[in-house]
Image (cartoon, rainbow, N blue to C red; front, top):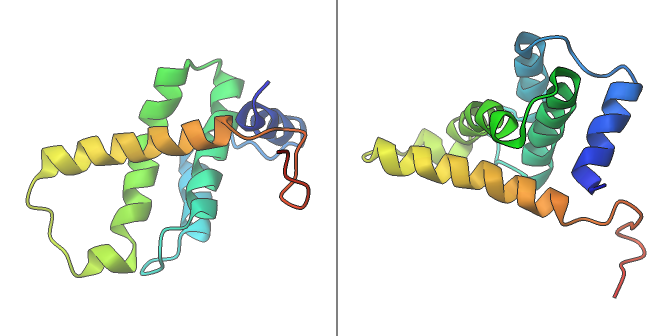
Length: 122
């Protein structure tokens, strides 16, 4: 079981999973402040929330990614960096957001569920 699956199951067991995506948007807004930098922690929280909801709905990996992309996109669009930029090539931006979401999933799935930052495995 990957770290991401472990977190998703923990959220489900802990009752932290919302029943639909509207409250998830509220959760994401509290993780990503408008004008703030997009952080790894913020993106990880988005992906972990979608994983937990996806587990409740028995959603496939591709379906969970489809659910995560708009949330990741919103987080990026709310960042201070994007405030001063206009998207000239929406198709390239959309592809980048999907790849950004997938890269975050891949990074989280690469983590050892037994490890901790204080004791990295070498």
